[in-house]
Structure formats: C-alpha cells, structure tokens
Image 1 (spheres, rainbow, N blue to C red):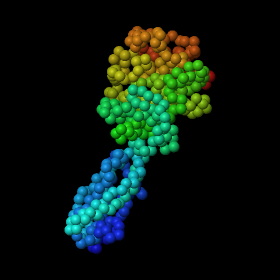
Image 2: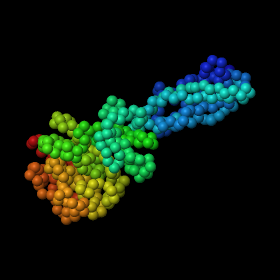
Image 3: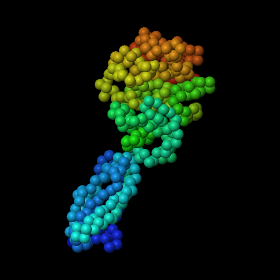
Image 4: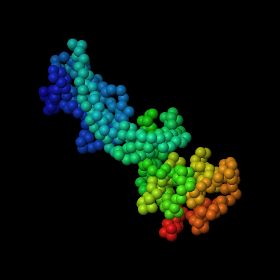
Length: 402
C-alpha cells in the first residue's frame, strides 16, 4: 500500500482494514444515476495488519428499489496489500438511496471477524418509474374490474392512484398494464390526463395520474342528473376531449375506447383553459403497429360506442374513434344514455339497431345544428364521417354562439 498514491483512511480505531472513502456516491454530485441500467463505482480496501484477511461486501436483504453486486465477491488480502472492489448498482425506480454496506473481514490466523460499514449515498435521474414510498394514499374514490382508484398525494400534487388487482399473477393483465404505461409515457398534451408515473415493484404495482376533481363525464351525468350543466360547459368539455383525440390521431394512434367514462372533468369553471381530458389508454394502439387496418379484437372497446365496422368484425381506422365520439356527444348533450335499457334490453339489440343503419332521433334537449354534427360523426359509412379537426371547428363555432 505504501507504494501507491491512494489516500487510505481508518474505518474505525484499531481496525486493520483501511479504505479510500466511506461514501460510495457513483459520482452523483455531477451525474444522476440512470434508472434501469447499471452504474459502477470503485472502492479500495487495504489490510494494514500482518495477518491475511478475507474481505467481502454484503448488504441487507435485496432492496425493492435497486439491485447491487460487487466484483470480486471475495478477496484474501495479505498484510500491507490493497484491492479494488467494483460496486455495481441498478436502480429500479426514481429514488434517493442511502444504504449501509457491510465490509466484512476474517482474520485467518486469529479466527476473528471484523465488521465495518460504508454508505451508499446517491440519487437517480427523474423518470416515470416511481418510488412507492413517495406516494401518500388517502381515500378510495372508485373501483372497477381492473382494480381500485385512490385519491393520493405525490410530491405535493393531488393524484389518482390506480392500484391493480392481483396483476402480478396475471401475465396478460400485466402486459396490458405495461402497454398503457408505454403509451402514457409518450404523451405530451394538455388535453390528455397527465401521467406522473407507475410503480412496478411486485405487490405495489400501480399507476399515478393527475386527479380530476369532478370524476368522469359519465360520473357527472349520474351525479348531476337534476342539476343543469350549461350547454357552454358541455361543448367546452367535448372540445377538450376532441383536441385530445386530434393529438392521438396526428401521432398515428387510435384510442379505441372513446366514451363519457374516459373523459375526465377537471374543472367546470368556464374561464379555465382546460376543462376535460382524455384518459384510459389500455386499448390504444399505434396505427403503424396495426398495419393501418385492424379487425375487431374481443374485449376491446365498449359495445354501445362501437362503430358498425367493429361490430361486423371488419377492418377499421381513425373513423371508428369518430363514431364513438359521436355517441359520446349525443349522451353529453342529451345528458343521458343513447341506448337506455328500457328500449334496448340486450346488447345484441343495440348491435342489431346499429348494423341496420338506424340511429337515435333528436331529443328535445339537443339543438338541431348539434344533432346534425352528431349525425356526421356516427354515419354508417366510415368515409362519410368528419375528421376530428373539422369536428373541433364546428364545436368551437357553437361555443361562440352560446
């Protein structure tokens, strides 16, 4: 050791083991650690005694937030010699790490164990892979077949925490969850619900998104049945949702499940820039990945909002989303179901009605110009349906006249 230029320090008084640093930082003072890949740091351990000492590093049971390995795993150090150990860390989520690492030595001559500690002290880059300890879960606000939604706090923001039911035991559900996360992580649009991130740690798997104070448009229809929501606000929420669809379509993505339940209402203040946002992208797919056309996949979408070509298991494109938006507009302006059970007792009755080219007549509470726009969205022939940007223009002209 005396022939090298490394500055060693004592781990503790009278210990034969020396070390070049007590904190392993992986240079995080200058660069944050990447999540999902390994970063290396080097630490030197020296034997200042006379007897041979076997040295190894150990940590407590494997941490959920990172993977750790040391090379070489074990070294026999003669007195007066030192060795470099490579410490590899792979963070599994965005987190700050402060963890004790044991340096264990065994004096071969005296049969004595030496236990010292160093500290791993580092920080990762910001990603959408969330540290579950940063989530504060407050109260349950919803439940579905997928799981339970809770109101919570994440870094000072009110959020919706969507916890999945037994997803780690269901490979298909986990794949769908990962697809939705992949989609959400790419979106950067004011009219799509903000995605904070997800937790992938087993038994803690969840998705964290922006919290919508008023729930979905569907929730509002149920809760506010006897409260008058102004026409202006209905149009404004639909414009926002249409802008979300426009963003998806301009990026070659079909939503495939447009309905009032998937339009979240963040504000009913008429002066707000954004009142409604699109959500639920578990069914969304890239058009190129689908080779431009797509036939009906069992379980995708909601029958009430399915275009005729999907019900007939034909190929479909963006116009299928337009059809679904047409039904959504009808229900929003009518403030009720398009196909009430009183008139349509079975799902097949709805499908039969649609496939015959029939549509619901205009109710008294939907203005004639708006109903005409709806008919241009739910046309039987896909090519006759308006593109989403034309729908936005028409809705904005209605808004100006309110």
